[in-house]
Image (tube, rainbow, N blue to C red; front, top):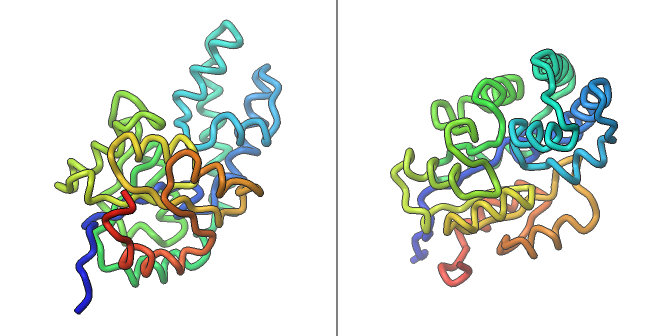
Amino acid sequence: MSTPSPYDLVIFDCDGVLVDSEALACVVHADVLTQYGYAITAEQVHARFLGRSAREARAEVEAELGRVLPDTYTAQLRATIDQVFGERLRPIPHIADTLDRLSHRVCVASSGTPTRIRSSLGTTGLIGYFDPHMFSALQVERGKPAPDLFLFAAAQMASAPARCIVVEDSIPGVTAARAAGMTVVGFTGGSHCRPGDAARLLEAGAFTTIDDMRRLPNLIADAPIAMK
């Protein structure tokens, strides 16, 4: 007789976990920031802002520049990402099959805007797995690495934090989930991932890492309570 899973909710980050968007977004973000007088590379965007909200990234850039970026900056960033994602965005390999195999409830907790989350999941054919359970950093006071978003998602889904398992690809995301009292699986299978990412996610608090989504259902089913 199998032992019931200690988890009743799987919380997925969106970018880099459900959709392979991070490498695309870093290039766009770097190009647009550079056009507005803040010279930065895609690699630097990856290192500094991965897993954080655009709102927080913008505030940090404006503090360094000593001036407020114009409204056209946000409009251009969104429009360019819309175009690039519409042409090139793909789901993370095997994610649909993985979601089909999961017996747990699922939701999304992302640093992206509600519009961006819905658009990305719609473009990649994944929205049906989550709608309407998609939660954004814009719905809480503090984004990742603060625990607010994950605690909000758990409350909306009527699940205790200790019974949530989170799938994250970024250090801010892992840090946020651990601060919320949740168990975290680090994911390193996106095209943006670098050598050493698994070790960094483990150091941040992930209990294990995977680079293939097909491992997730068995991992969750077999995960012991003691791993918290």
